[in-house]
Image (cartoon, rainbow, N blue to C red; front, side):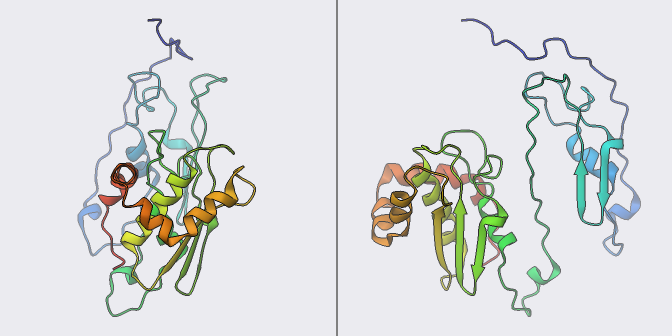
Length: 238
């Protein structure tokens, strides 16, 4: 068997001199301690490079001086190891920050698009070891809530994706498991993104067909595998 050819077979390795030291304020619950660039760097410095048994810090891919925080917005600029690196595709990842009202039982807190996105973003793709967020299959701007009606539009990775129905079913099952029963959930393919979108959307909208599909033991097992990562999270919406 031939060895996989590395894109950068001889990367430059840099010393890792940074050492994060927690401050006393980090442990004091009475102090509103803002997250700074050093803490963000500590979160990402030990991410492994896709090709090499080295971290992004060791390869100088991430550096603390290239992190910027403005209010609640975090910008991380990274440097690929070589100009033609094919591993450099960026993904925008949304970090959900619960609000104080989410934990106050005396406040009737309406569920919004951000909370719906948080429920479905980590669903695994049926084919790849990646999440629907990482593949841009689900995006927060394609979620709409009107009163108790939730609409999620998703984008298959390719126009002829054979897993589109399974992806839609996984999203639907995840939301039905988590949301209060008063919610009506519609999951559909975004217009113009799949060659069989009308047929798939019709299947996903048919409650009887969805119920019949969930009686298929093999199909249920596959769906459970897709949402297994999300099931580890706390469901705070019931």
